[in-house]
Image (cartoon, rainbow, N blue to C red; front, side, top):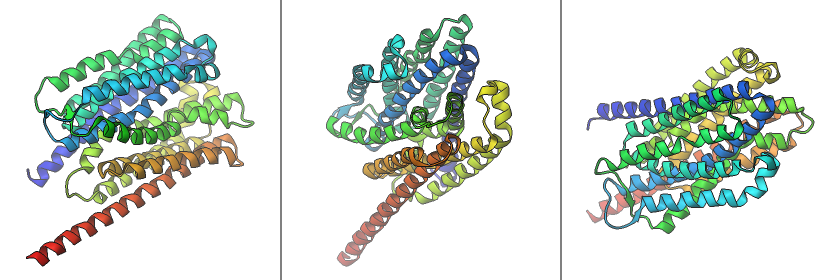
Length: 428
């Protein structure tokens, strides 16, 4: 295949994946806005915490998707007779996730959702189980280059969830049925994903890695994903913990603002992790031209969105949600810039995973999270300034670590190639 054809193929893949993740992100935003308007402050607090808990678990388990993509991509096309069946890996991870969430629910349900909403822990556990199974399917599709089917799953998740939530809101059935509506889309996704994987031969369903190796690598990616989830999905809970003397109204407004400013950049980038891993995994290809373009792109998009948030954001919040959710324009702009920093860190991650640098990948995210939490705790500023600064500085330090690790790995590879070349010359 010629280079222009390769570039056109990559461009089509990028557009296909971005279309699916854009639909998913927009649908999530619409759900949050509709729920805020329909439920009122008290019920929305419960639904918002359920949403945060579910998608904290989903973000943690995205590490399963990343490791599946890496393992299936490195295995090549086909499903050989030896190795580990990915369906077995999927079932082990899904069952483990559901049991862990259910077993730990006595420690997190009461202080967050309240004892009267304990049944929501079951919904979170089942939702995490369903997501894990779909994550493995998405990893298989990504590794096999089935980006059309991959995008269909993203669109199905977004549109299916929006339709189910809209029905429950229209019927005013309450918070618990609304939570069930959020996870009701997973059985449909599993059916579509299974059909996409099985209907054609040549899709990798078995990998040479042992189950132990898969679980070990997944532990690394899930650890990093936990740090990611703490910075994205779980950050509202951390922010409330370190709110200090900020009013409950300010905490609520900041919680919604953090969630809304994360989605435009991070949802597409998280959804494109499988595509990015396969792009960085091309044999003999330096990661630096691609990562440079991606980092410049996210910086430009971040500046544009920050300008829009700073000028139009306060009016949009007052008009769409209510006066109690209004925040100054500079706070919204800072939150968008911090989202771009998180996006940059999300772009360096697949480059390290493709290079099999799992430990460096984990360290970068853990450092970013630990520093962000520390700054959120100690900075002598208002919550409106502490939160975006913590979310900006932490990820930038993590990004610096990732790029340094990638540079060290690239230097090592060049030295290894030079050594083998020199030996070949001598032998000749």
